[in-house]
Length: 184
Image (cartoon, rainbow, N blue to C red; front, side, top):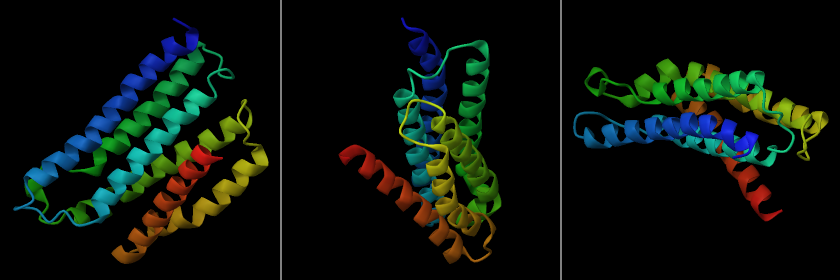
């Protein structure tokens, strides 16, 4: 087992729990769909976080040669994965009976979930600029400047349609990045 495989087994376990948390929440919501209005914001947030997790996992793999495995690396990686777990946990409420409309729950937790995603996105972009990937610090800054207004819209707008527009644009931009990376 390589050093990276050793560290990645910890991060992979935690990130896998994140995926399970989002999918489990969606499953609970679908199971209670007669009692709860699922809406579109909470599932969109779940899709965004799943996509964000997947791209983070991919970025870890791409930078595997540049990442020195030290106790500090394990602590930082665990902190990232723990932040993603917290975000994943908050997407769907534990007690669905408490919310007749999941969009109400979304509006309550979106700033925390998107704030975690923004911090991990920004940190990941900057860290990658120092690694072996093709991302430079300048490119990371440009990427953050493109995404920042949409994060701000999704986090701070009061009207659900504007919040959804910001979140939808972030998700589309992430998906565009995935497609460009895949076919580049």
